[in-house]
Image (cartoon, rainbow, N blue to C red; front, side):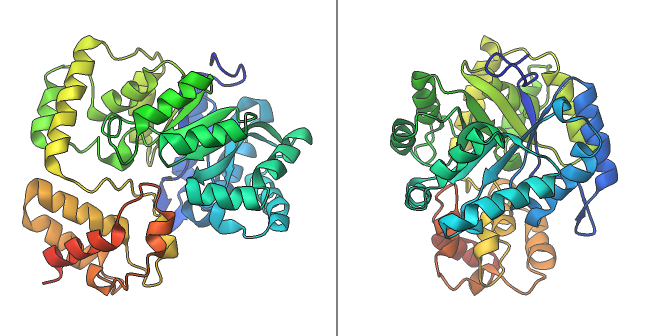
Length: 372
């Protein structure tokens, strides 16, 4: 039983942003197996948003979860995302469409999505927080919270102005813990100080902490006790005040592995924490682009450039310096006809990027490496 919310079981949740796909659609056969395995092993927390997989995440949850299990068997979190409304009167119809898409009468948690200083200003102007609190009074949401991508002082402001917030979802992993651009530790400490439970997203940093550089991988291998993913997820779950760690699992193998070490969770011990610190030191020397492949940028790009995939190519080139990354860049990730050099520098991607990356400058770097 979760010590923050009695209805939440355990401290590990199913993030439904990266589901198994087949021919552009959610593979509901595989997803159903994953849902069943998750629930049968004592977990019950599912997280989605209206824009995940172009709306397909919500409807897949209706088909594979909510239509198959009684309402009390699962906890469902959804979010109010900034790019789906521009007027206050659009919020309620959007919310009702989310309930319908998910096949439920209420959400257990409803989060103001991807809050930063600019997005928060829009939500305040359009009374989005007040509207969501109306949904709570109506019984259509049980708990009200935010997901957050900005500096700690902005989080402090939001929690001061809206003490009704019951949980905060932050990006929290060992690579970002002391990163000045993310301020994971400082954001966590703001929540801890206020007694606000933390939901962790990106514990493996979009997969970056799974496929480690060889020398970093050897540090964990020497512990003879788990995979890189296990250390990353357990690191996040080891902090007091963390109520939930989400993992975006794309296949049954990932589900089985994660269930294996989170079913009977144990925090990292001193030796494991020391290994994490050593791996962080190696990452700092890599100078990699800290993109988590959330793909919000691709939704905004007028040239339809696969920005996260191109960043992944550059990161791989920095790590491995082999022909393979050039092949993927030229034959896989730019087959739509748009390369990094096609960027028109409009900046729309940077306005929505949760990591606050200087995407226009980074695209120049990608173009210089690959578009010769």
